[in-house]
Image (cartoon, rainbow, N blue to C red):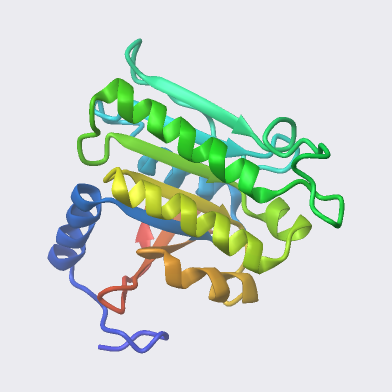
Length: 219
């Protein structure tokens, strides 16, 4: 059976095994589609909202333009850090601004890496999927910076998440055939398209390594 991408449609057992491998080995997932409420539902799942073993969560957000992901905690031992790049990481200064006057995205990348490193020190090494990262959303970055610069930032972030055996997800509320999605997709392990249809939230996973796309799954 073929899907619109030309790959096989995995059965539920294969899909479950793949998700298990992504959780054990570390993964980065691109969330696309315009349904904001559905982004929120998938975000909570990927952050481990229902699990007791997800202790380190990093939110990278633009407070002026985000997808509405809610910050969650599972107990007093959770460690949560939020980087609001609309206010702090990208403040323009003579030492960080380029020729265009824009602050360097390298500043944001360094802050992300340093935060993960601090978590890693406290954890004395992460267990698989103990680190969860949410970037909410990529739209302001793509609006303000060229795509190559955003690509470099994401490559730095996804590489560190992989190294930590963490789970990162990145909100890009565009249609799955948008040029930005096509450009950024190769650096992710999976692309999840979300939608709300007849009042029902649904998701569809494209697993890049397997070149396989699931059917639409109800959340």
